[in-house]
Length: 354
Image (cartoon, rainbow, N blue to C red; front, side, top):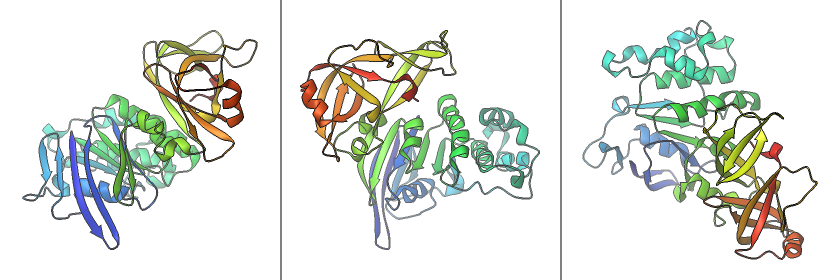
């Protein structure tokens, strides 16, 4: 567990947080600009020293009223918005900058391992000005990993990248999450990134914690803003049953029910996460026939929530253990005579899932 307790005032801004974070997976610090995400991350790193703060990482006290472990003695890797590579050094030398300063016994990750993980093997003899923004950021992440951190802090690492570079780097961040046993605290204000990467979410607003918990739960909580945004989405965890069908689809299982999506890389029994836009879910009282939609899931209505658009409603559905959001018209709610606990069928386009 990571215990975080900070109270810090910077001018008119006050950070006041008390958190218990999981010491595994990805925790996202999410909120609009000025909510305190980067300030909290800097406090965790020891970059913002303030009296009275407390941080305990897996039983090790990094900071309390009696002691303060300085940033260079904390076993962390820190990735900033900009790669900040040394322009006069080749990528291999940038990559090894912190690694070569570790004692042999502390070098738990090796350059070849990290280069393969981030797909940068062919870039190591180049200089920073010969690389794209996404490539430079991957090298910066590799440099942080090669300090063999026990905790990786990432401050909006894709904020300065264009859409193409973001699409390039996201799969590598997913590999970090899945293949390395290093907890990551990831700052972002892009919900699409958070949905792809995070397991746990902390929602910050004006320096205070508005909500925290499992990402799946918070995304569908009607008391929070996520469910009422235009791009509201649910996160479903699924298992691969058949990686590649004859018609180039991947068959999954979600809470015991089959689901088909565009073909994904992966093997049978592997786990995948699906982001399902609420506006891409269609509801029916009976399984429809002779339509192009190929996914039909049995569900139960949890509740029906008002939507920012008065012509719409937000319907929360329970599949089994997981919750699915559907945004439909108010007229459709009346036509289907929807009510709480009603059995219903949720129809989803296979091409709409990612």
